[in-house]
Length: 341
Image (tube, rainbow, N blue to C red; front, top):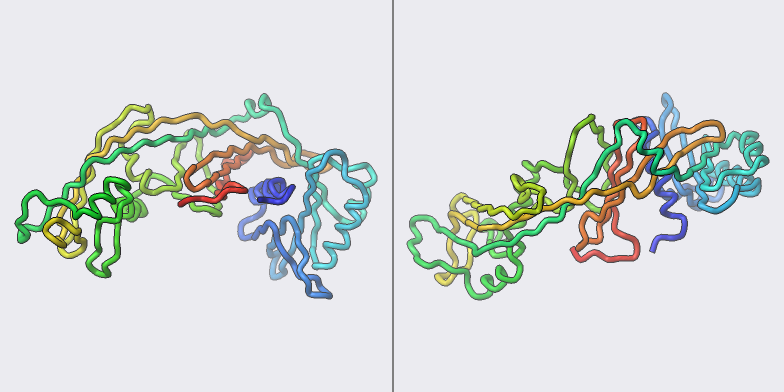
């Protein structure tokens, strides 16, 4: 389970990720060695960049607590940042800072930031607000029809009992193909996945991955955790109506074999009838915040959290700025759960 305040720190890291210059590196959390003792000190967020030939370290500490933060926290940050050689310290609070804390921060060159939630009405004024939909996919597979090369003249070819039962239970995920080069087992899903890597109309996301993308006006795209689903979705409308599709794969000779009622047979062609439906549901922003200094607003952003893959407990967070055409897409397992895939 994530520790208290971790979600707030991750939000700060995503905001700073949108603001830092190209080439800068951001970590959250980061463990930085003490200049004297060599022991690691934990910081909520760090930014490393270069100015000319010099390396610059910026550290951020975050507090999600009610009420203004006081001088004691600021004083502690002065020592903590100095001990690791930070060029700049930034203090981030969800509740603001007391008057004296702001004055002490200025005295020591510490920048302060406040994150506050803004109303849904304010986001409606955004000129280029992005809209997101979640897709629900249902796929049913029919019998697997196997055709052999012409020199294998068999009739009524069936998978052997074990692989036949596996296909009935697992469908496209059943490993019924044997690659002749190394005797490894392959499923139809794996073949679809390999094909989609070079020809998929979507960005495939993996747990822990983070992407920053420029989104031109009036554009659209698909994010997915399962390349097979993306492969199968081609040509399927998002209106919930079922569509019949026929998948046909042809293989070079001696690429794949299957175990059949005639023994191992070299596969020429596989054909599967599928019934696929896909419906979509709008996803509203789950968090709308403003990131500001003690003098002005720096950035406003909206975040939309979507459960990308329920079986893997995989969540995607889409962060968009009011002023930028850039969005950040990050994925992570849902805290406190374990994926099955």
